[in-house]
Length: 235
Image (cartoon, rainbow, N blue to C red; front, side, top):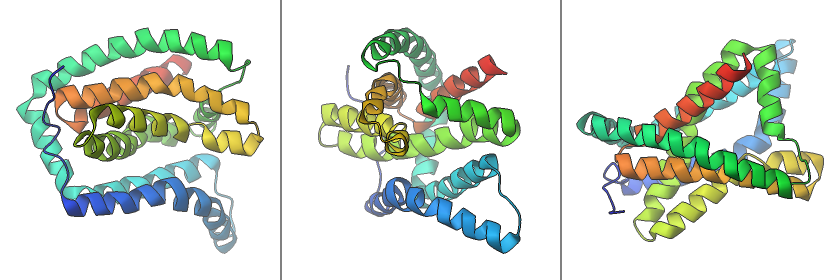
């Protein structure tokens, strides 16, 4: 497949700000979120629900993503309008590839994960039951925008300038690892990390859609559609 221009890349300042965002995303916010919410509960004298915490968490990341990549968002949005047909076609192909490949990999992961339950999915289901509106907003809109900006726009897009296979490998692995590592740490079960297999196909397909469409909105639309269909299936 021929290489395509991916939203004209990022400027030096965007790369620096993106690195700071990455540190906040992977290290600072996961470590600081619970203590900050506990402090806020004490100051307000009221409990903050899990759904409200998750929504606030992603609102913060969403705001930081807009700030860090403000110029990039403009360029990738112009690419969306300039290549609307290609973007929509890529999303359609991505949906077919996602469900076809994901079914195969899911079955394989079930064979090697010793019956591990996907705690990320279970947590989302519980949140939908407790606070459906905020959870749907987070899962269908906020999370896809934040995660695609970080994993496809920043990590994949910038690594692709130097090494395309490495861009796929690193972005897919980090995307998969993000969805399982906290649950593996909380349960103190290293075997749980085998569930990264279930997230490799989504990472691969979304990176391909981003690259083929030439706009980050391609992978965002695919990510949102997949999440929306998953939510709709349990409502």
